[in-house]
Length: 306
Image (cartoon, rainbow, N blue to C red; front, top):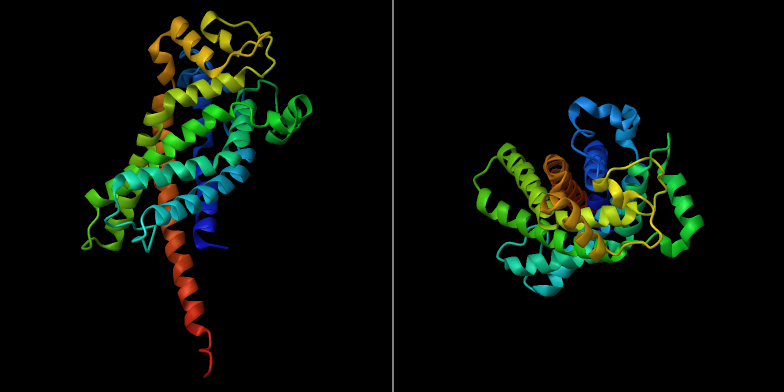
């Protein structure tokens, strides 16, 4: 299978392992928990340390596949958009808007994996029952909603992924063009890849964070939670009629104002910088390793007719 598939898969899984604890905090902030409940001094809100890795199983399995599809679709789309591209991992001279379009196409292609993965992850992270696993959440969704239920919130997830990954590749490639040079040592190159990857992660989430917040609250409506809640947390309470994405956005703005759309962004930015710095570094290193190994194998193959 293609090197970019496995490089994307492994780097995606590594990113989730590193970033899941901060992702739990981000999701709970988005869902409507107050700042007092989620401050560092009140981390007992998360019941125990194990809750900070809750929901990791689905993303580790799913996000590895998602990242693989993302990078394969991006590379193929970029090659189709610009016939002069010989190495999609180093698109020198390619127009930034083509890079954005290829990234958006990659994000849209990854939706088949990201939509159910995100729904399961969100449910697992917000569920207050002890020791709730991703597998248990997936079975519950299938039992109550069927296969189609796994794609609840899929529309806004696809919009978030398409827009976000467009900016993801766009910002990473522009950052590399501005920061790297042929004179850099291997150490300097590695450090700049880490920095560019981190910046790309922050830019990506900055471009779609309100959409991600609405997605979280849309999916959180499916959780049965009978605990008392304040007015600002009312969107988590089960309702007779499930609110649409537009209705959630309208109600959130009416009750909590514009700040609610960026609640948890600081946590997400820290997570995005760390995760994507490591993820891009892992992807670049794996691609070089796979390509080097492939070249060695081809060099050892006997020449036909000799």
